[in-house]
Length: 199
Length: 336
Image 1 (cartoon, rainbow over the protein chains, first blue to last red):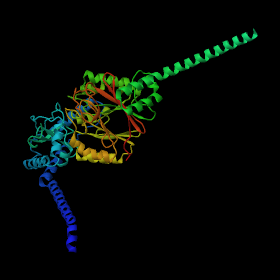
Image 2: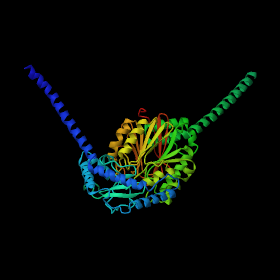
Image 3: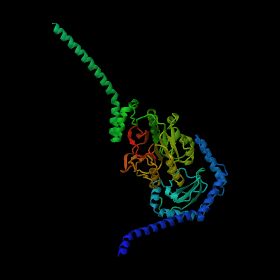
């Protein structure tokens, strides 16, 4: 009788403990999966390609220094643009976003938009002057006449990290790898964003 | 007879004394009235326009301390205290159009009286093309008087800015960085790049706010976290990442642009939020009824701000020189 009473009193506690355990296990699994994904072969390959890209750029001794003269800054940028183009004369779409890496990015982006932060990211994108899909090419200057589509921070947290020299950009549904110092498009991944994301 | 003479002379003496006292009192009263009248008129004007108790406090203080400001003929609502930090705020300014120049002229007029030391720029500093000519037309020329007077400009990047050009452009004082911090007296300023809030920048924000010894902490960047504009609205994802940091490290005030209006939002968790994205561009009748205390969307504006030990005074001025908002905001946070 006494045992029954104790067990009925303990029942909610045991239930709560079990649920906590389940939640903790789920979180652990997600974290492990995410870590595994970050060390996935696609991410490793992506990082190597980025590193190779930067080595080629570094070999060109590009140095953009602060100046009070807008003329000087423009000349520096033109020089950087020329040097990066010379360093990658045969550069083409998919050199960095290979089909495998591209597939990985698309999967990551789709999962992020379907996840709990998806709605928030979608809103953020739509409120920051979303750009239409326009034709873009590798080694082409980033279209300066268009405003920059700001990148939602939560989206960036779900993509492999980039060094300071490169940034992700979104133009329409294309994910662009943007070279900051030369203002050139290093690579691009069309249809990277799931349909209906941008206006 | 003698008595009559004595009485007459007494009355004459009394009259002359009374007359002299009366005249002296009248002169003194006249002087007092003439001295106090302008201050009271400024006080009445400010109270009538803002209708807030904070503004009334400010105005009362002004009447006591700063009658000299009124001698310029300008409606100045900053206390102009010694050792305070004074600056101006512009956002979405770089159009190169006539309206930008009008605002710049009004800024110069107020600078002559207020002598703010620097200007913070809330992004979209240069619209459209970024040729050297554009830097002249959209920045150097309109603000030439301020630049020549030694006023420094501290820029943050907007979605129409070229990060590569502008972070390297020395008059923008960005030190070659997309995001940076600087200190003026007891006030620490944090210029963020809200176009690209990557994990690295978030870590920097966390560490820099944490280690800042500034008594006041002011962040400025382009995309607003709170905003009642129809055109853009608030950036909710940016807010979800920045707000916990701002609250954790006791940020006092946040200035943003992007929406081409002026708004003073209701303080959220002890942080004051201002949106000023109409120093060049304007989105007329863009504001919805919402969470703002004061909104203005029918002309361009700029702000002048003064931070003292315990208050942030602000005055928002339109292109035509009309004060459209002002007040004295107490520090709500404890220094971290």
